[in-house]
Every structure is written in C-alpha cells, then in structure tokens.
Image (tube, rainbow, N blue to C red; front, side):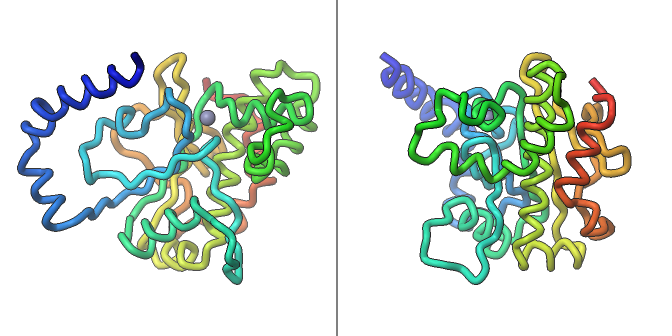
Length: 246
Ligand SMILES: [Zn+2]
C-alpha cells in the first residue's frame, strides 16, 4: 500500500515534473551538479529540505541524519566510516558550495532521546544514543541551566543548541575554517517550527534564533565572525539565557 503510493507518485513525476523540466534534467545529466548550498538536515520524515525551500533538482546538496548533527572532525583521519563528514567534505571540497545550512527542527525525536538520556525508550539501541551524544555537552548544559522549566522549553533549547554545536564542529574541519576565513564559505544555523510553519535563523548579533521574515538573511558564521564566538557553551548560554523571540 505504502509502496504503491510511491510508485504512483513516480509515475506522476515521470509524466509531469520530469517532462516539464526535461531541459534542466538534460543539463544536469550532461554538465553534472553544481549546487551552491549544502543543507544538513534531520532524517525526520516531516522535514524535507527540498520541499521546505521549494528548490529544484541540482540546487541543494543534502545530508540527512538523526537530529541534523555534524560530528567533530577526526584528525588525522582514521579508517572508520564517517558518512556525514564524507558528504560534507565532498560538498565543500569537491563541489565548492558557498553556504552550509544546519537545519534543526521542533519536536525532533533524536533530540528528545538525547534530552531523556537513560529514560529514553531508545537508550538500548545499538547506535542512536552514541550518535546523538555528539551534542551531549550542550544537552547537559541546557538541562542544568533550565532545571525546573517545562520539558518542551528544554527540548527546544537543546534542539537549537545542537544546531550551534554542529556549526562549531563544522569549523573544526580545516578546509571549512580556511574557506570561512577567506570569505568563500558562510555557515547558517536554522531551526524549523512545523507547528506554526515558521523558519528561524540564528542571529549572532542578538544570540537568538529569529523568525525569518524576508528573503535576505545574514550568515550565522561568516568571515567576520570571531572563531571564539561560536563556542557551543557560549552560544548555548545565549540560547538558554535569553527570552525566546517566539
Ligand atoms: Zn529530527
């Protein structure tokens, strides 16, 4: 049933979207892809970056994993399987993207399991908690600083702090830090609230995730950003310590 729906969808795509964009697909097939943007998003079925941003094939290079996390750079590289890091490397070094967007979201199950820790129903899974522990430090900080506050508020703070933690980890990859410093790459921290259909972007000037109103937006981390300003602990304090803008 579920698969039939997919195949019906593909049949519609074949005679509809594909045919309508035949020239674009031919161009992408012959010239290859050259996206300017890498989006790192959650694997959550409700948060599809292509649909949220109404992009066309070839526009965005996308990495999706649990909770839209970027692991710390492994240096020197080892022989383990760093899937997210490999995709980021290909986008930045191979494709030369100009922007990297980390897109977190409200009601994130991966973040919820991190917040719940040993109480999570996923605590005994083989890989999940080890993966989300990428943001363990900021999770612990948020839980401590927001002690006694409603759980949804704590979860939201961790969702947003995890985005900042990922941005900080991105700067740990030497080829990203070099490009950001040279002004060839900028990093963006976004958070999507699906219950109100609103996108928020982290503004380093106010240290808040602010509702995106127009089509112009400043990068969260640009060549003018002091590297010390993206330390996750400092940013988490900013997220947790200020009244949310929404
Ligand atoms: Zn999620």
